[in-house]
Length: 569
Ligand code: ZN
Image (cartoon, rainbow, N blue to C red; front, top):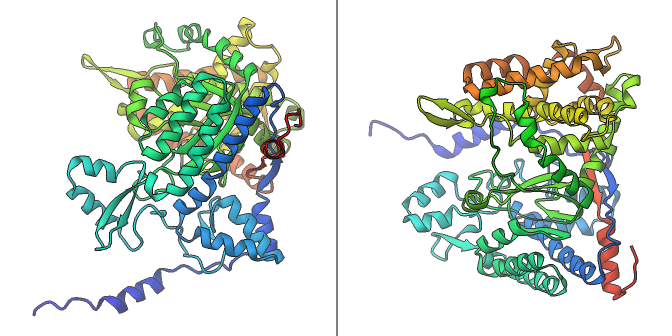
């Protein structure tokens, strides 16, 4: 034999030893306390006093069903999670209690806010990227090879949202539907949703609850997703397998989560008011008139709600404040997707994170110009503005989407567009008298403080890049100023022009599909300059996010268990 194969074992061990970085010591009780304090504890409260008694009882059933998503998600995330949880729960020492708290926040023993570092002894160094969706010991390559070998219909099932892959008795890969894999829990959740449906009065709510209960047992989620899109009720439940982030191998498998919420009527009315202004805003965008859209398409539905309870994939690490669902492309094609915004969650983030940031980052005179109303109204406007401006590029007689043209530069520019043109649109509504004049004082400053919150989540993803681009543009235009002490402020005389000019710049790049110009803008501007970096260092003690305690949901459950019909709240 001319070629001697390498002796695999010793070499791989040598490589492993060389590759393992210096292990940082596991955190003790004090360090764990500091770690969990990055998420500020808050009471999540909702006024449900106007809901009639049967609806409240239905809501309690939905919360109970939602609670089941927690153990399901734990099991999906890592096969060792449930055993570890029981071990931790028995350890009543201060260290054990801190570990349990950190475990709850992260839904597992890896720090989701800090690169998934392990914080509990005896767990793998690396959070398993395959979650618990695929067989232990299988490699991604094995799995992909097997999937490719399947006939198309089977391949689609294997790569589908709602199946796990296991090994049969002979050791071969097999496809297991969620309805089988998680049978016990899903049967219990389905029963609770049916009880809720019997109590609920509103037909679209009943329809969703019944169909989602069916889906838990049949594994066919289509009809219930359609019903969820049509939901138009005072209670807005989202419950089931949805997002695919926890499957880092293929982004194919959906994690269980729930958000149980009630509609915010005042904000819903505000949205309707804004929606009727959108065509007029489009007609006045600061771009070449030929790039404006003379007839805007139908709006994607947006719901503003207040959250009572969240669980599973919807309650881990940094809290979800808004989501677009469903992910099923068939439904997205047929009906679009729905944006749900959790207003009370946004408000608590504002109080615990944004306001403290403002107190450090802004010049004293600007600090009083920060308001939740301006913050939330801008978030609504950001969502609406995604629908305005150029979406297609005329290229040799046919139309190509801006996304296709701008490729990897698309997302950061589109996020920056929605932000900056959102300010432009708010200014227009102020000038028209649709929005109160006081917003002119608060919205630019609130947006500036909010920029530091976004940029703290990193410059590697679209939102962070888009925010850095805006800060730098507005600094260059003199719309933002930095004082010698490092604090930032808004120049009221220059900010409107700065906002309009960036709107023009981004939308013109989009309308012309100029990828080179987009890449250049991002490379030069979507960076943290020294004055921004210095400020980020000063913000290191401000909480990263919040940790909600579901006080209204707990009271509601207590009320339901007590069988009271009173107005306890
Ligand atoms: Zn956006």
